[in-house]
Length: 401
Image (cartoon, rainbow, N blue to C red):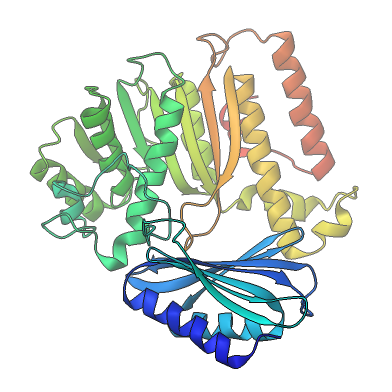
């Protein structure tokens, strides 16, 4: 056990380095305490919502656990761990490294060495990254209450700004899989307040230098009026918002169709529109998988997962997977390479599933003669429906499969 006097000198030096802005990190090692599988603790300084904190990474034998504490709590926890089991503590600063160690003979050593680094690391919680959409000189961000007139992101809009950029990054990587110049018309189904619609238009025109037409389809007239006003103020001449439903929108010439969080069968309506248009890229983030859940509940087929689906929460998750799984199969039937993946847009929003269809060829459109590969897919869809007691899938019915 390291004596309190040495701990006090160590933590005082830590406190001073934080206030002097020359703190680099703290490392605690050679653990002999009672916490099972704990091997090391690493501590760095981070900035979270404009407040400086200490980020603790607890390294166990098979996992890492991260906790963020305010500065005083963090210093006290370091002191406590030095008392209760860590035999070595090292404070790294740009001025010096300070090493606190209890030797095998019980002797306590506090020694100073030359600094390992002369640079103070960034306090940003996430690694600094070059965003595709910047906040500066973007009138639409100001109009939508994301930034002030100087381009500074409002504190309560930080999560939304990161989310917008994350969506654009995903779409950017998918667009790159298409032949150059493919994206001539984009439809954002259920565009809401237009956050993504504006950012995507900005990316297509400012970054990719495309002259793409972008349309946001939204049922609420007040949102349509607001977004058209913002588009005009932003001089986005090829961006417009139209009032209406996904079901009624004419998507014949659309190359990229997006539908984020369209509820229940509205996602099927969006995919149907994309398939009918032979859109080169279809991207949906489904929610509220009620139609298939009702089918499963009504028919109550006994199968290998019945022991799970008798619980509401597991039934809900099963319905989500089955619904989106069949959607992916239907996209494959019509000549799309599919991707289904989960992503988390930031630390404060729930997980989302994206279902993506990238057109492989101009063939296999609605109404054409089916191939052997398509017949196999139809059999998979049929078997899945029988297994789970599903009478019909809404997208299947729309496409007359």
